[in-house]
Length: 232
Image (spheres, rainbow, N blue to C red):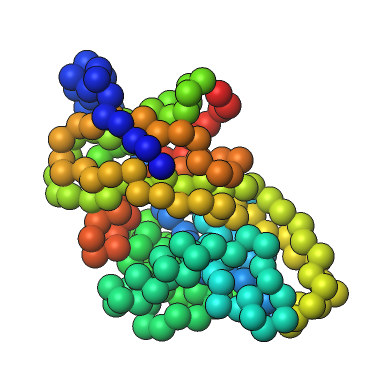
């Protein structure tokens, strides 16, 4: 994906940096698969949170390592598998498994355990950190992403996702079931690096009905998040 720094950076970014801080959502990342029989309860929990908790940003990442076991998940992404393995390499998660839920890039719980999910969400909410505000503007040529001033360093991630899909599963462990899944990630791309100074980037619209931008530190902690509202 081709990105470019806005020529008007000197005008846009300082204005944005002076805006009032905006409360960000806590980010939930469910690593799941339609081929996994223990995943539907976790999918249902995430779908419930997506409907009822506007203070959260639940995202479902469909991994690829179940695809050879009877059912190929149509939403599986190599990038989802790589992202989960990266959390394991960072020590955020102890192993690669499904359904795994990573909360704000710091806490790993079994996604099918609702009480554990709720505890992790409460813990993340109480210790939430925001390094900088993010604004997403839709235009006829794509997106403009503005990040304000702050401290530290982090990567900007552009995520495209679909709100809801229902899938009839024909084979594998969930054969015969109709699965309802929310906030399914269809694409994830690195926009660039942020080092504390205001920046403005342009990017094409990613694959997916909805758009979110995450600010993530090298240790995995999410320190910024914003969902784009409206349409171009």
